[in-house]
Image (cartoon, rainbow, N blue to C red):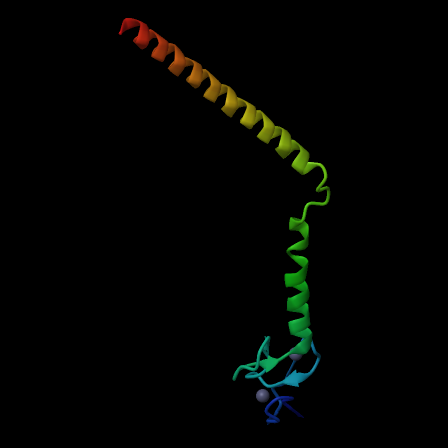
Amino acid sequence: MGRCKKCSIETEALYRCPYCGEEFCSKHITPTIDEFSYGHRCMQYINKMEAVSRERPIPKIPRFPSREPKGEEIDKEIKDLFKYSVLLIVMILIVMIALRVLRVV
Ligand SMILES: [Zn+2]
Ligand SMILES: [Zn+2]
């Protein structure tokens, strides 16, 4: 026989929260991150959830940031070079066509 930590109901069907270790009735055993009508606001559970959400973004940050931008920079340079050479060829073609048209006229 014990009492639910939240509603103080006296019942034999008490469950122990795996996070905070307090005893609750079947209605209030669910650990929640906020004060809902069901479950109990469990600080240990909140802390654990916050820790998990804090841990997740870390692997996304590159560990060797000095290496990756270099490759990207080279890639960009090659792409720029290619763009400019295509532009140059197009301009030469336009000039050649213009000269030919002018000669015909
Ligand atoms: Zn209760
Ligand atoms: Zn709890």
